[in-house]
Every structure is written in structure tokens, then in C-alpha cells.
Amino acid sequence: MRGHLMMSGKERQRLLVLSRVRDQGMSLKKAAKVLSVSYRQTRRIYKRFIDEGDQGLVHQSRGKTSGRGFDLRVKQTVIDLYKSKYDGFGPTLAAEKLLEEDSIVLDHETLRRWLIKNGLLKRRRKRPSHRKRREPKAHFGELIQMDGSHHLWFEDRSFESCLMNMVDDATKTTLSLMDKEETTLISMRLLLAWIDKYGIPETLYVDRKNVFVTDREPTLEEQLKGETPLTHFGRACKKLGIQIIIANSAQAKGRVERNHGVYQDRLVKEFRLKGINTIDQANEVLASGFVDNLNTKFAKAPADPKDRHRPVDKTMNLASIFSFEHQRTVGNDFTVRFNNRLFQLLRQNYLPQPKTKLTVKKRLDDSIHLIHQDRELKFVEITKEDQEESTIIAEQKPKKIRTYVPPPDHPWRGKQREKQLIGQTR
Picture 1 (cartoon, rainbow, N blue to C red):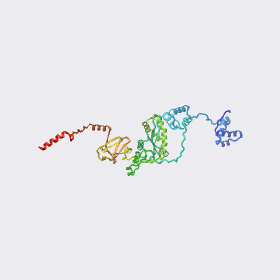
Picture 2 (cartoon, rainbow, N blue to C red; picture 1 turned 90 degrees about the vertical axis):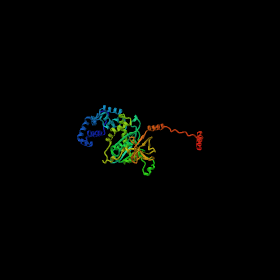
Picture 3 (cartoon, rainbow, N blue to C red; picture 1 turned 135 degrees about the vertical axis):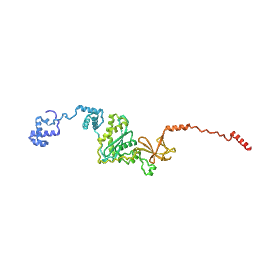
Picture 4 (tube, one colour; picture 1 turned 180 degrees about the horizontal axis):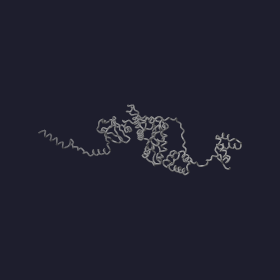
């Protein structure tokens, strides 16, 4: 037989052994022992070798299409869909979307091989680990990592925004909200949403941002009370009994950092498929099942089933706790100024006197509350229209008419003196 014949290592060994059986009189029993196959199988292989030559030792399925393989048209359809809709998707996510969006059942490893063969998937180089791994906490709610991820979540369709993310260290349960920046407001809203859903956690693990910690010097009042300066977020956590731990590096809070990668892969592509371009639409997607699906797919059971979350006490007013607190001084007219707004205190019990300090609380819903000695005060806001109206009324008051008083050298005064002297002589 002319031409080239491709053989595997096992097939080449069979060729050498069976050639010795044919040419040198080696017994089939000894050949079976050398080839590590049964005697009956050795007889079958030797018969095919005698009948067909070297070609008879090559596997019969070589070069044939597998009966379990996909049709070439299906492969091409999948490749075309990936190029048009799922470009940049990983094989696992792309396989999920092909099933959900296009009803194509395909294993992610099969898709990975197809993409690599067509040059559509580049292997990602993993960074070498150089830090010692910390074991996860054993209880749900024992430690929650919290961080913001600035990213082009809407790709080139909109501006860069920030995803605030919370990840439980024991279970990898996640919860997230999106905003323009990593602010105190979005951090409070996310923590409040976590408390509403799971309860009050024991500890928060955050980085050294001014949202969570402050480097300012303590005020005189704080020094007298022995208090440490706190941010608005830190004050809310202190009232709830939540301990804040500061991470000194991004690697220290690796759980939430790796979770950012999951969002940056899957959420960006979800936005692309649904045409999401705004923060409000993004938060609707997060709340309408995206985060729950992530938790179902990636969350795991804790080492200890005991939940460390504390229930919210009935005496706690979460709306009051999650607020921005500022100190202001009562004016002589019992008014309080805050953010270019003027509030008039009404007549009531426990009314603070002028020059007294009180607390102005701005809640997450932008409502204003005035607090003095743990009591909420009644007040009304004086709007600019009210101030302008009072000014107009003041200008419309009739002016007081001054009576004319003649000077000492006025002729009229001389005549008056003469009349007085004549009257005295009579």
C-alpha cells in the first residue's frame, strides 16, 4: 500500500509485536501479554492485520464524523450568533444566553473549543497568587465586604458609573446598587436594603474612603465626650452596632473584588442585550432578578448554618438612623438655617432657646427633621416667596410724619417770648 499512514503510539506498538508474531513465530499468547489485551482480542487484531496489512491496525473511527457530533450548520449558526450578539462573552455565559435567548442547547466546553478553533476566544492569563489565602468566615452575616466598582457599565452608550456591591464572606451572597459615584447616599441605601432583606450584620469590611472613615481632627465637644470623629455612614453603623474594619489593600477584600469581575462580565452584557443606558434602568434590572439569579448560581452554604444577622429591634427607626446629621444654632427669632433654607420653630413644649444648638437630620428621602435633646421639634419652612412677601409688606407700611420744630433763632420763637413777657407783667 502506497502513501502515508498515521498511527498512534499504541497502534505502532501493535504493529511491532504482531510483525514478530508473523515473521519470528512469537506466540499470540505472549503477544497478548505484551499488548495488555485479552487473548481473544489479540486474535481479532492479528486477523485484521493479516487481511488488511498495516491499515488494519488503525482505529476504524479515525477520520469519520462522530454520531454524537453537531451538524456543521448548527456550528455555523452558533458562530454567527456569537459574532453578532455575544461578542466578548465567556463560553459559560454565552452558552446560557444561547439557551435562554435562542433555544440552542450547547455545553459551555463544546462552545469553548469551537470559539478557540475559530479564533474568537483568547485565553486569559491568570495572575500568579502571591498572598496567603484567608479562610472564609463560618457564619452568614459574620463579615460583609463592601466596595464600589467604577466601570463603563453601559460601554460606549453612556458615561462611567459606579456599582456599589456587598458580598457576604461566608456564602458569597451579593447585593448591589448603581449610582454615578461612590457616595455616602448610595452606601446607606445599599446597607439599608441589605438590612431589610437579611438583618443587621456583625461586621463590615471596607476600604479607606472618606465615605466610611474620616481623618479630621475631633471637635471640642467630641474631645470632651471622648468620642472618635465619625462619618455619616460610620455614625449610622455605630447606632446599629455594626463594627467597621478597614482594609489596607484591595487584595485584603478579595471576595468583593472578584465579585466585581462577575458583574463586569455578566452585567455589562446583560445591559447590552436589553439596551440599558441609564442608572435607573440598571437598578431595575438588578432588582428584578439579576442579583437573585447570581446568588442562586454562585452562592454556597456556610460552614456553620447559624445566622449571625440580628433582627431589627422594634424601637429602631431606620429612617432616622440612616440620615445626614448636622449641628445648627437657633436664631434670636427662633429660626434655623440649613443649606440656604430657613425653618421657623413653632411654639411648643421643650422649645430650645436662642443660641442653643440642635441637630438637623436630612433623611434619605430628603425630608428634614429638627432634633433637640432626643425630641423632634415642630417647625415650618419659610420659603423665598414668604420672605419676599414679608419684605413687600414692610415696604408698604406708612412712614411716620415728623412734625416741624422751628430752630431757636426763628422769628416765630421771638414773638412767642414777647407774648409770654406781656402776660407775666399783667
